Image 1 (cartoon, rainbow, N blue to C red):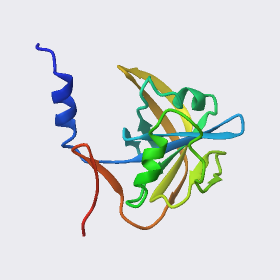
Image 2: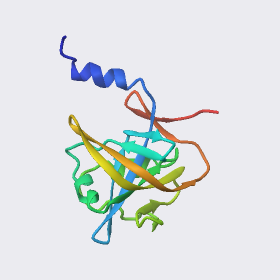
Image 3: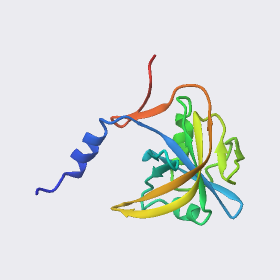
Image 4: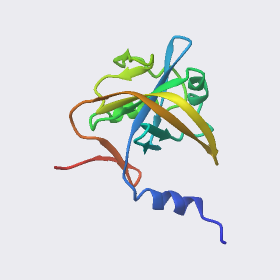
Length: 158
């Protein structure tokens, strides 16, 4: 079997449009979060989701001990919010409106949907971790999603 070129792998996967999320949690009473494109529904019974943070993430290790996290699904007008949570330095919540959800996790205002989860399990997945969350609470808003396709932001045109 031949080795897969990393650039070609990224280019090929870029042909799959994905939604964009910001995953949030609390660490010692302070909100933390990161932009996460690797998100999927996993199970209906029981309701579960999966995220895949990079092992190089500086935020995810701080969030694990909370035992709960929130997946905030971004709306088309939240591109700047996405970019500000994609950096690995500084306090990302400056100027961000949020409130504490039923699980104790930060819920970002203006998102298309939110999914609060209890941390169920973490599995090794190459240069990422595969994280399974048991859904505790859901909410939805209105609008269109912020999407990522071929290394660019886009949205649904209706």
